[in-house]
Amino acid sequence: MIVTRELINKSITFRDSLYLDCPYTFIDLSKDIDAYKNLLQHKYNAVEGQSVLIGEQSGRKQLALVFACLELGLTITIVDYGRKDNFQTDYFDPKTTLLLPIHFFIVSTVDITDKFAFFNDACDTTIILTDEVLDYTPNQTVNAKPSTMLLKCTSSGTTGTPKIVHHTHEFIFALVMRNATMFDGVIGQAFNLSHGSSLATFFLPTLFSSDVSEYINFTLDDTDLVIEKHKLDHLMLPYPDMLEVFVEQYKKSAHAGINLYSLTYIRDEWKEYTQEGKIKDIISFFGSNETSGPTLINRVSYDDFNRQRYHRVDDFYELEIRNTELIVTLPTYNNKIETKDEFVSNGETFLHLGRNDMHRINGKFFRDTSYQRIVKDKLNSDLVFDFVNNRIYLAVWETDDNLEQKIDEIQEVLKKRSDDAHYISKYKVLSYEDFLSGIKLDQELLREYFRRYV
Image 1 (cartoon, rainbow, N blue to C red):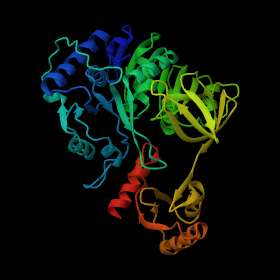
Image 2: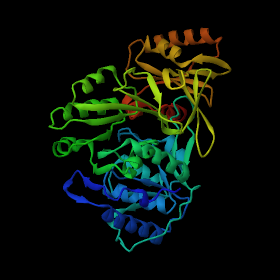
Image 3: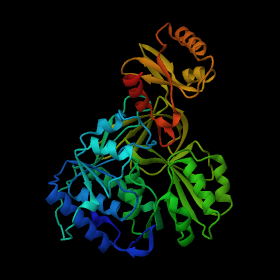
Image 4: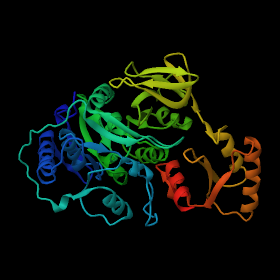
């Protein structure tokens, strides 16, 4: 019960967007896996338990590196990095720091960006593949065991300090084999390993499915070229804006029948995409880095479709509702995850009511949404809650001529509601885009910014 190349469907034909007319096979991929294993094992003395950050986009190198690392027992590190490269020189990423040490950072070439410089400094050893001479001698070494950590990432940190999340080969093996049955035909893979749950929900299951025939790696910039030449059957686009841009491009192609996967609510207007017949289905996976998933699933094609109504997939996870909060028991570990998501359920369908936003600072409970409404009524801003230091910060996204006066008014309301326990400790006018991770505000990054620089 370990994850190695032997689980890959040997019949898959692989293509990369820049070389769509140059397909390669499992045999070709296996040679690359051996070369990277030899490099890591013999030159860099990599041993089981060390961690690696793979800085490759979707493609042959990423595929080969993943399996080289997994067979050697290295832990794939997933960093939650999705912001622009315009941060200051003393930039601090709390989530990446939490994941240290990262023993190896692997990239094709030296890319002189702030992002490259940050990871080059944060990781112990940077491996530039274009500088290496590869040895393609077959390498049969498999150091991984069922208990070996396959990946590490962090929890979201939305409602508090993020935690390190680990998953073993044994757990991921079981989950991936369960998920592999969802996929067939031609797979589109457009991302690097940028999300903690995508490895087990899409990346690996699509490789291991016996019903998959082709696997096409590309970047979103090459979407037009790929959908012109190939009829894709499955593609994951985690964020709504990406899905909507893709659909507009896909509508212009001669192909139809694709299944699109998202990690967010299915927007009501997306139902039109499937009614037009161009899109076969749109599927939302519900889960988290702690649970991976999908723990629950929603489809536009459901007869009872409701953007908030999810369905139980199977009995892989044990699910219970405790005081409206979804509690997930993970197989293999047999530990319970408190999701902080509220549902009502009849046992098979689960209506999502939202996040449990009840928090406590300085001994007083409050609701996140209620407090955020107070500030948003007066300023284009967000409150940032520091539960470690029992402080509240205010990130202002747009300057205002009456800023000081409005902050005083907010302070008065917060203090009155909390018997003086809650008030704004610090505030600053900031750039919203600098604190995005994907499409969401990175709360832990904001907390650390206020702790360190304000």
